[in-house]
Amino acid sequence: MFGGKLGVPELLVLLAIALLVFGPSKLADLGKGLGEGIKNFKSAVKEGEKDAEAGSEKK
Image 1 (cartoon, one colour):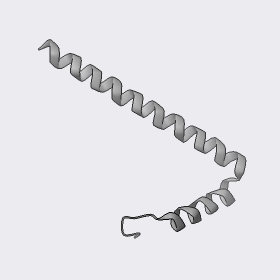
Image 2 (cartoon, helix red, strand yellow; image 1 turned 90 degrees about the vertical axis):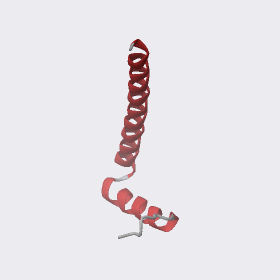
Image 3 (tube, helix red, strand yellow; image 1 turned 60 degrees about the vertical axis):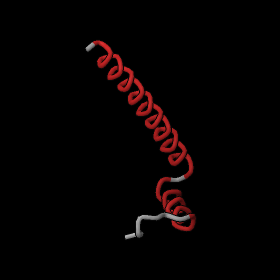
């Protein structure tokens, strides 16, 4: 649909639509939740890599 690329104009349009739909306070809460989710995902991936590394050293 977008040719696999989202440029600055497309992102601005999406942000404007999200602002209209959710409002500024709800949009801030959504951004905070998204950031926390990404942080938790990264820490889980790092922990999984450490566990896999420790498991391969035991063999």
